Amino acid sequence: QVQFVESGGALVQPGGSLRLSCAASGIIFNIRNMGWFRQAPGKQRETVAVITNGGLTSYIESMQGRVTVSRDNANKMVYLQMNDLKPEDTAVYYCNVVPATLFNIWGRGTQVTVSS
Image: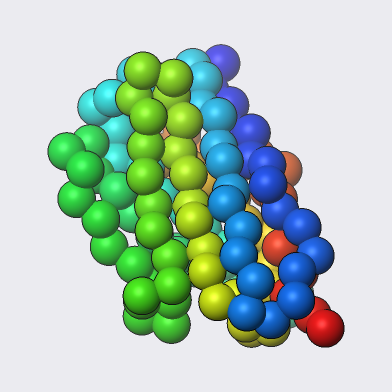
């Protein structure tokens, strides 16, 4: 059974940092490209970061230089380190395989709120 469990979200002040974690199960993790996505209230879900099965990374332009995605294939984990957070980063963050339509299953996500 495919499952993604995200954690690490919190309320932080502008300029703060967070590290999100995602535990994947039910997939052959090491062959999959993985991504972090986010959805803010009233907005469409967008891709924040992608890490390929080979470790290549790409990021949404608005977070370039402030975010780093990494993976631990042995433990089927994906991480998102976010620095210098801004109010516009407020959203529910999800992880999934890329493309997410492969399994069409989403976890509950983890809430990130950036506010003073």
